[in-house]
Length: 254
Image 1: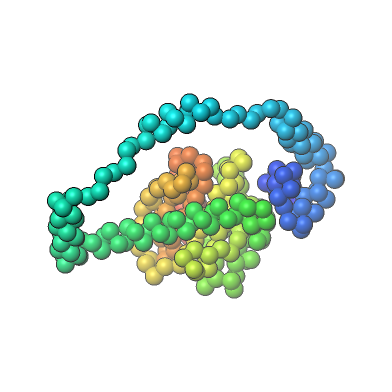
Image 2: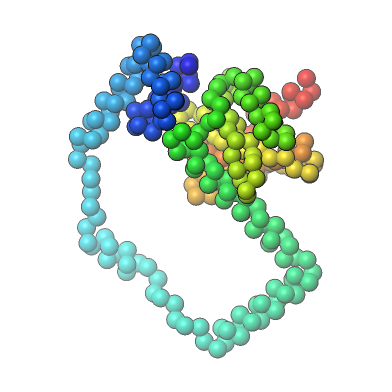
């Protein structure tokens, strides 16, 4: 294990969140590395200082009353006119369905469903022992690991020199289907890049969404769909996506 790989897991080791295998790897590296020994000691010292500090705060009753007063009043039961308007709206939706316009809404709902699953998979990966099935900064180690596990192995590109460190890969599930996840790190932030095969070979320009505080950049090309998700800013995530796309096209041309 290198110092760069230990940096990814050393905080989780201090918090007792690693499984036995990864904990043993990090502890073995730390035992023989003065730099990482000092880093782990500093983290533990900081945790102890925080634990000793009295940082608890209980909100006063006045705050609860102010919040309750600010909440909107309970809606009154619908009257006959509003019910009739509801029926009229339902008829309008039926008319739109006849013209095919509702399909747009359904497709949008499908996209939202997939992105909600992406968020869930990202959150699962942040739990102890769930981040990576193969932990490595070497793309020639990560990419072959996917062979035989998926119909098409996801592209694995080393962007370390561009500010986004490759740290491994994982097999995950989105919408009840297996999907490849390539994992990167930006400072202390994790970026999961989910890649799925699709019959659509057209190139689709990137679009950015935000769900539950996470930014998601999605795009498609070469029969693959990509979702990059992280809690870094949208501009940085877009930078990651652009650099990945550029490197991927460069590899194709090469």
